[in-house]
Image (tube, rainbow, N blue to C red; front, side):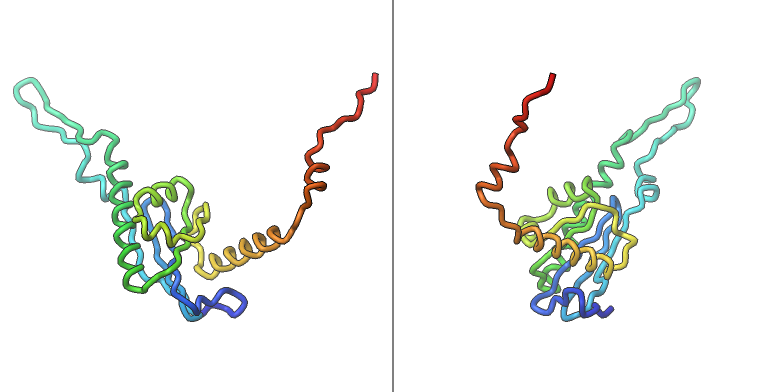
Length: 179
């Protein structure tokens, strides 16, 4: 889809927007005034966990045999598989589209897992991270949010405070107490 003129156009080089939830990810590529969904995947915990659920055996005489494999561990395994698949797909999209910047939109707990598993080369390309659940957001809304954050960052950088002003601002209250 076309990017409106008031938003960044990404004409210099393609940029990857990695939008992730706990078990779902979408990859948007923005270049030459257009943004499109390049790839996506989702791991369903209910479907993926079936292979590792409990086993209850047949009765042997007076006893019944049962076993639980990976009791509570299958979610951790699923998180590992998700992080590995995310890393591989990020590398594929980055190489295919010759990406030079990556912007990550994910909840904080997912972002920490992403930063641990993603390659060093891809991690060096990450320019910004945004904490929150953005999977259902329109990619243009993500661009709007980025634009607002950039404007706020630029406006705060231009404020210059002299040493004297800093002293006054950080001076403790020295008024004598009454009574």
